[in-house]
Structure formats: structure tokens, C-alpha cells
Image (cartoon, rainbow, N blue to C red; front, side, top):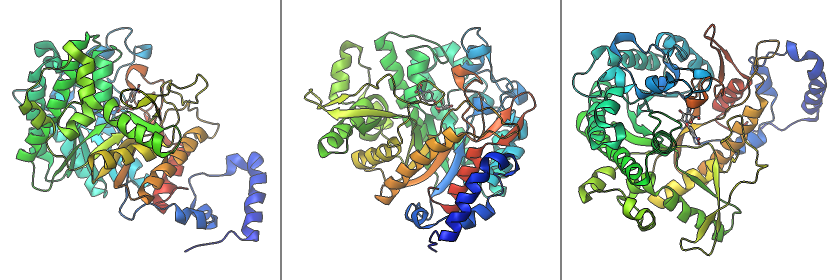
Length: 492
Ligand code: PNW
């Protein structure tokens, strides 16, 4: 029901604002029932999400689980990489991380108190196949059985990612990891095995998380595991094996999972934002979205590499067969996109009709140097995917940010910058759904602070602050904000 802001309630709000500086420690940001009743609803109502919109949160195995030697788990390339001095800030490792392996029940309660209806987690391949292929380790899948049961008992839908970068070290050693088609094949087999075991309860699987990050950072710049800097030909072939692995996994899941199981991916496409919203620049941004994602999303959706990609790569282009392209473009049920940051595009008189506009030095970013703030990314990302490839079901599989979180005297992190970031991004997502773009859900990265890859524990992305010495989780201000968004199904 619409509730106008009466003069009396306005006076009350203005009055309490004046009190904030002296009374702030007495205000409990987590008892917001009263505040909710007092808030003007008119504008909020106009900013509602579709009725069945699924609000969720996300994590990934190596970033939260710890317990790296337990119950028969084999080593992954991230164990090796993080234990190599100088690779990760402060030589941090995921040996313990958030100890989620033992504390998952407590973590499900954190989700419950946020009100999320979906949890995106990833399965550690080396827990299930310690050697990458061959004999499975039943105790590995048991952990995910327990987690899934706990989620369902708390009315939270499990969304499982099969590869969030923790490749079994055995595959890296034996065949060179994703440099080899053998890894693509092994990934398919592993995916089928997991789907067979979990699809009676898990209805959504993501094959691979962020081709655009793990291949580029792991095999070209060497910033991530396995830390390689391959020359262009071998690098393009590695990209090809990653999308081939995705396609083989889709086929294996279709073959082994219960009917009705849905399959997609979680890709951090370049999100092409028109510099100004005119037809000219919007069309340029659409062309750019196809070309800048040619190696991953475009070939997966269209079953062919773009002419420009192949021509530019020349002799370094990947070697592939028509059969490969068929596998890679196996039909999907939905597309997941991870969205953090915009790529600004303008129309230009170039062969492809667009140009990427570099960011000025003063461009604002969050705590991670790469995390430029551009809320419209959450509008244009889904818009391009729906328009270019006629995708009917889209999930935002990650969105969130790092901030330099420090608990205040009362123990709470007042992360107003994260709230600012989320409010602006979620507003643009609402704009997309209001336009009829079929976005079905949103998973906030991340449920809690965790191992941020090469940045170790220095960059925090969580809605919950984790004290790594005690493993205590404390909700930040942004957790309260997100709970409000979920409760009202609207931007607040
Ligand atoms: C994603 N970049 O990684 C991953 O899926 C998560 O595991 C990660 O914690 C999260 O985003 C935050 O970083 C990225 O350099 C890593 O542009 C690096 C980049 C983008 C995404």
C-alpha cells in the first residue's frame, strides 16, 4: 500500500537525523522493523522487482572451505600456487579460509537471517576426483550432500558451480591442465558424476565460473594458478579447451541428471556500456558485446568464433573441428553473468564500428584496483545477452565489491561505500527487469569475507565480516541493507 510521507513523519526523520551523531552507538542497525514501517513507500513501490525474483548470495569452494587435506581431498592448482612464496599477498593460502567445511550449518543460518532464497556455491573437483579422473572419492561428494540437505531444510535453493578454478593438481601435472583436451574430457566426466549424485535436489548447475578470468589470469598473465604466461597460439588453444570442457559438461549433465535439471554457465563477460544512451552508441555497444566476448560467450551462444577474432589471431587462432563447435554451443537453459565493472564503448569509424573508451585516471573504483564503479553495467549486461542471443533466463551470478572494512567501536562495519555501490547497481538491475529483460535472480558476492585469490585476505567482499583469528562472522551494515532489499523485493 502506498504511504505518503506525512509532515509529521518527515519531522520525525529529520529530528532523529539530528540525533545520529550523539546517539549512533545506541542505534541498533539490525532491528529495523520500526524503521521499515516509517519509511515512505511511494518511490520504493515503483522500484519493485518481479514477484518470483530470486535473491541469493554466493561463495566458491577454495575461497571459503579450508579443510584442504580432509576426507581424501587431493591437491588443487591453487594449493600449489598459494604455497609458492610470492604468488599471493602475504603468502596467504586457503588452508583454513572461512572453515566453511566445518561451519556450513552456521553459514546457512547467516543466509537465513538475510532472507536469501538461493545459495550459489562451488564444488571442489579434487574432493570428488582427487586425481582429476579415475576413481571418485565418495567422501568428497558427501560434504556437498550434507550442505545441500542443510540448505533445503532451511528453504534455500542450492545452485552449484562445477568449476570455480580449483583444478586437480594431478591434471596439471599429467596433461598440462586446460592446455590439453584431456582436461576438457575429464571435466565432462566429473560434471556428469556430480549431476548424477546431486540432481535429485540440485536443480541448477553452472559449468564453469569466469572463463574470462581463470584462463586470462592463469595462462596469460600468470597472476593466478597455475601461473603460466603462454605465447598467443598455446593460449588461444587453452581458451578453446575451456569452452570445449563447458560443452562436454553440458552434454554429460543432460545425460546423467534427473529430468528438469537446468544447466548454464557463470561468465564475466566484458559488459559494454554505451558512453551515452543514443541509438548510435547503443548499437556500437551491442557490436562490441559480441566481439569482445568472442572467445567465450559468443562462441558458446552462436557455435562459431567471430571472423574478426579468427582474422586477428591469424596463425595463432585455435585449432578446432566443426564437431567441437557443436559441443561448445550445446543449448543452455539459462545464462549466468558475473558483473562488477563496465567497459565503456562509443560508436566509431573503425572496421567493427566501435571503440573502447579507456578510463581516465580519476575514474572511481572500490578497494580492488580493477573494480571501477559503473552501475549501468547491471542494466546493459543482461540487456545485451537477451537481445543478442535471445536468452530467456538470466541470472546475475555475481555482483558485489571490496571495501576497506574496519569494525567500529561497537564491532559493526559501517560499510556505507558498499551500500552505495549496491544500491546504485541494484537500481540499474531493477531498470532492466522493468524493461522486461528476463533476469530471474541475483547472487551477491559474497556471503562473507574470504580468500580473494592473489589478493589473499586483504580485500574483503563479504556481507559478513570474518575475524580470521576466531572465525567469528559479524553482519556488516550492507547485510542489513540487503535484508531490506530482499524483504521489500525493491531497491531501498
Ligand atoms: C570473481 N578482475 O573474480 C570471482 O568469480 C570470484 O571468485 C572473486 O572473488 C570475485 O570475482 C571478486 O574478485 C574476479 O581482475 C577476479 O577483473 C578478478 C577480476 C574480475 C573478477
